[in-house]
Image (cartoon, rainbow, N blue to C red; front, side, top):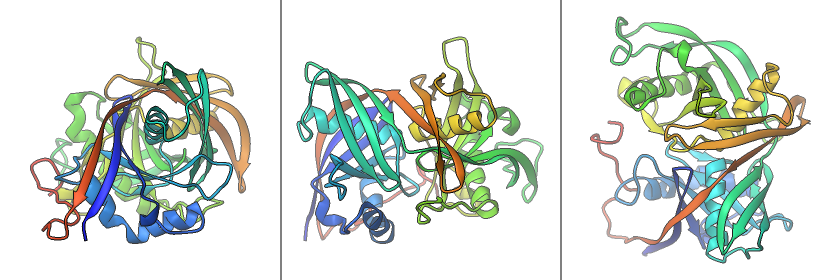
Length: 361
């Protein structure tokens, strides 16, 4: 049997997103929670097939766009990243809404189209600014974000390849935050880690990002209060201060390999090409918990490509027993192409492949 996949290719402020359409039959379930659980348990092969070579590359993300189970939603999404299925992604939501509007799969209304997106962690409202058949801006009213741990010690292994003066087997302790912004993040300051946020720092960022993810899942387990199936910290945000070019904060977000282990060969990953939407929400939740960001105050967040998302907290709420904030993210996406992908049943690589020249060994 040959598998055929249709995609709209897009990017959001630099982050590539492959928006897969007409895939309802691949993801059974009566609710989005059931479909997300099914994907995690049964569709890892599909995630690898789409994101790995020869169809994918290390920086690529993808989205399964589905018929929503909630009648108030226009579309449901399940996000596939290099390390895992994730319940929500700001950049991938921007890619999806832009792609579906510009190809007519969701009717476009100018000057603003409102799109309701069903995700595994709740409904997300999207306002798309539209002119001449193009989407020129997206504002996402994201699910509530909340701090889980603020300024807690995390013991991580050292990596002598990127940390001169250290030896294999040593550990060090760094201060980190853990927050939910649509998915769980561990956040650490670049200054505390001894790394920069420039292209020259990428090997060190990949290594320390992977080690932070490995350690935080061992030392600080998480579970969403209303959706206990969301129970891992998948992403790492390494933060820096603002700059004189208009940003209130800078960051590098690391998507660590899905084969992460104590083996140093796995201490790597890909960097988010965008400023990271859910990560922006998580960072704003931490800043608000510290008294550093007020409700209504804009927060311009710059990523590794010098593109920005503008975040804003528009209110406060409670998630389970946790104080939470209501974040928005504003950015832009662009359609970059359309594609058809095929898997023939005689293909020797039914889940794609990775090789150590550009992938983890």
